[in-house]
Length: 61
Image 1 (cartoon, rainbow, N blue to C red):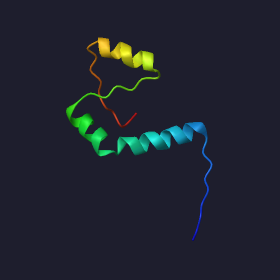
Image 2: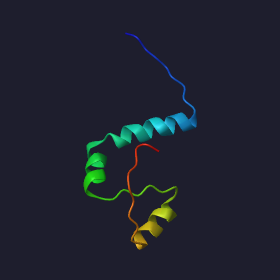
Image 3: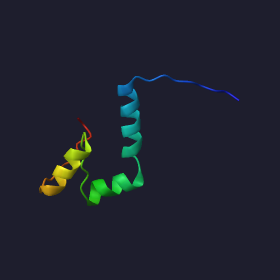
């Protein structure tokens, strides 16, 4: 059996996780039918729930 160990920087790891999450069926469905809020903290999520903000997905950025 071949084993491979890879070391990633924190930034690379976060990007890999983000790319994987973006491919999930529930995320793809929500991109088409709903709203996804990405926040840097739980406080920001709570504040976004209080406002009527429309977000757009732009994979080219």
